[in-house]
Image 1 (cartoon, rainbow, N blue to C red):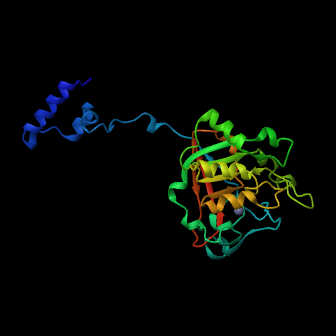
Image 2: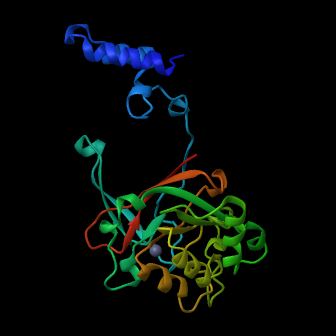
Image 3: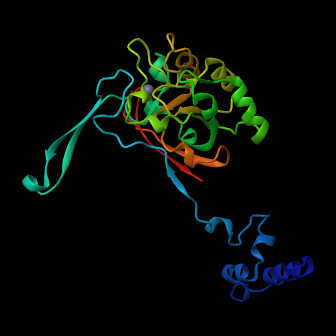
Length: 277
Ligand SMILES: [Zn+2]
C-alpha cells in the first residue's frame, strides 16, 4: 500500500520535523513502513513464526534392562532420599557412558579426539537427514547403509545440509525389548549400521557433523574391526546410538536438537534427542 514516493515523503517529514513531531517507531510499524525503511529487514509479523511445530522425542527411556552392546546391565539408580523418609526424592545414578540413547564423542575412538563436553554447540541444533534402509533390513539383520543409499537421498532431496545429522532408519525399534534388538547368536551380534564407505563419503562431502543409528552401534552388529567407528570418530565428528521414533520424522526438512551431556573429558553419554518437524 506504500509506494516509493509516499515513503520518501514520510522520511522527509520525519527528518525535517522537530523530535516531538516525529512519527514514533510504534506508529511506523503500524503503518507497515518500517520494513521498507529499515534496509530490507522484515519487521512485519510473520505468519510462519506462529505456526505450531511438532516435537518428536527420539530418545528411549533409560532403565536397568536397557539393551547394551556388551550384554551387561549398564544403568542403575539408588535412592539417596525418599519422600517417605526425607520429604523429597533424590537418586544417585550409576551408568556406562555408552548406554541408552547416547553420544559417541570423537574421544571414544581417538585418543586426542574431542571429549563430549567440547562438542560444538552449532553441531547440536542442525538439519536432520533420515536415510531409510528398512526395505533391505527387513529380512537381513546384517544390512548396511551404503554410498548408494546416500546417493538415493541426495538425488531426491538435494545435498546433505551443512552440519547435518545423518541418521539411519532401519526399523530396528520394532525389536526393542526382545533378543533380536542385539541379535546375539552366541558368536556375534546382528543389526544394521553404517558401512565404512558411507561414512568415508560423508567425510569427503564435508557437511555432516554427526551420524546416528536406531541400533546399538554405528557399525553393523557383525563387524569385527569397527571400521565405521574408526573412520568417523577420529575425523572429529560424533555419533548417536539407539535413536527412537525415527518413523515419526520425515526424511528431509526436520531439525534435530542433540542434548549431549557435558561432563569434562567424557567419551560420550546418555543424551536427550528431539526433532522439530
Ligand atoms: Zn557408544
